Image (cartoon, rainbow, N blue to C red; front, side, top):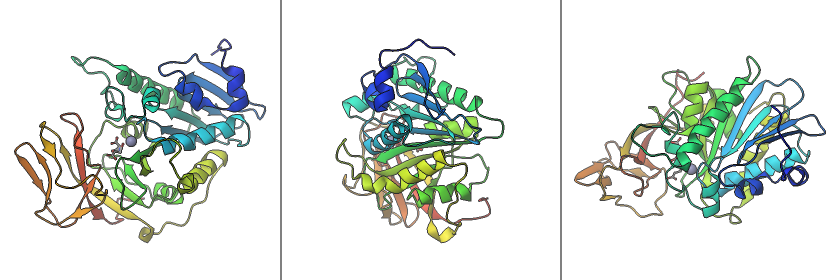
Length: 351
Ligand SMILES: O=C(O)CCC(=O)N[C@@H](CCC(=O)O)C(=O)O
Ligand SMILES: [Zn+2]
């Protein structure tokens, strides 16, 4: 495709600052394409969406998304650093990469979302008869289309990856953890756990049902090895201790800049794995938790202990050690207010 030359092009080439360009253009940006001196093709598809295609043959198609929730700034800063070093040619790519800042306006207002949680709109849920559209619904559809197009243009036989980078609202006993989307009975991959461990993520939650999240979408629709990766606790820009993300950043750099990467040999003892025990949705206005806002993810409850109250319904722990993940009483009615998990072991469903 041929594009005209937008006014932002020279500055983008010299600074690599695609984040500021995105933040200055919350809803759309004129597309453009250019080639770096090292031969990498750069395509700006729209605001917050930039693709890099190295000149040489590649074997991996990698999507790195952040800012699906706009206030989760550490992943945005990691991607900002990677994009800048690619455009300014301090980092040379060996693999195709698509970077996505999910929700630019929500970055600017420093909120999880503007009208609606973007991460509940994927897998077609952006377009539902009788429900009015809004910018997040439009964005979810655009992101699906861009990811579809990106994977479709990959080399035959290329591996597909999508790491959707987040930070959690609460602190977590296990600071970094990943959500492995439901695979509909397909086996979980030890190689992906090895990659996550290299990122500093030793804790993984195995989902047991379909979802409307970005990571489930690329896993289910595109067969990508895809994860929601929680890298720490939400903080405003400037307050992240970036040293806590160094392992993640270096592992991502290796993934995109090397033909292949060797990870530490798989050892089940390196990981803490959890299986989702149940999902509790908010159905009533008077939804509450009996615990304080500073009670952390992965806190376990004793059997019979109250975990949540939804109107007249009391949710008590059904097994000893049932642990809370993502408790949020402020979600819209009908949405997930709490996940609970129980420990699981590496078994025959891992390859
Ligand atoms: O800390 C929280 O309550 C939410 C953190 C967050 O945004 N988590 C994702 C998880 C997505 C998934 O289940 O794969 C979300 O809630 O969208
Ligand atoms: Zn998030």
